[in-house]
Amino acid sequence: MLENSWFKKEKPFAGFAGFGGGVGSNLVAGVSIPLELPPWYDDLDPFSDSSQVGYWKLESATARNENNTGATCSTQDGTPTFTAFGSTGAKYWNNPENSSLNCGDNPRSTYPLSFSIWCYKPTGDWSSGGNNQLLMNWSMGGQRLSICNLSWDGDGVYKWSIMYGGTNHWTFDPSSRPENEWMHIVYCIQGSNNTGHKLYQNGGSALTATNLGWSHGGSAGTAIGGNSAGSEDWNGYMYNVRLFNKLLSQSEAAQLYANDKPPGA
Image 1 (spheres, rainbow, N blue to C red):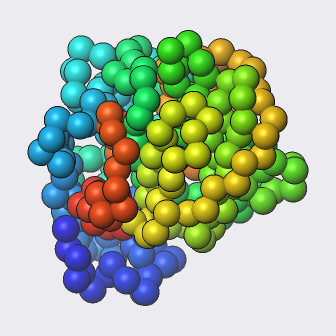
Image 2 (spheres, rainbow, N blue to C red):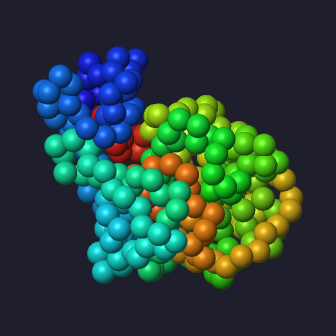
């Protein structure tokens, strides 16, 4: 996936969308440079162990679970737009701060599970939008599981968070808070309010979890980019969501980071 591409590192074309982690066109001085799809694009079993149960590429408002192609999503709370990655034909979910997707099915309603996503914050979006921005709102045996980025004090300092309906919340300080770059996040959740959960950012070592206590209500559902009621929307871009029926190791998270990148990231 152009691992040694001349435009991949150091962002020499940071002012041009689509380069150095940016998004959009891949044109420079009128010349189209092809952006290759990642090796695991369309891979329904990336670890060859049947552990992947959900794969949403998020290329259109009628996204579907590629592991169960009959499970088509529907939009909630407005409609996101979708922007193409140059000449690849693939797209990413753009401007979803007023929209989310109802997945229509629940391929994993018991623990353990792991949730993998590529996400992106434009300039200023680490300090804007709602205090609670959900990457995923899920139903685990009827209990609400919220996987989110949350400003706990309302001060614009967002942390990766796991919230369980009716029991403790857990947070992870991001290893970095980049803007205008794609980030890869993997949540590994052992069980409801279980201390065995982990979070990996960009394939690195597991981040340290902090138990904040508290509890929250709301309805359990099967939504990406917001909650089941169509609010608490993610403020940024999203691409390649994967759901697994096991806890991923750091090595597996690193493999996803290397093989699942958005074109040009």
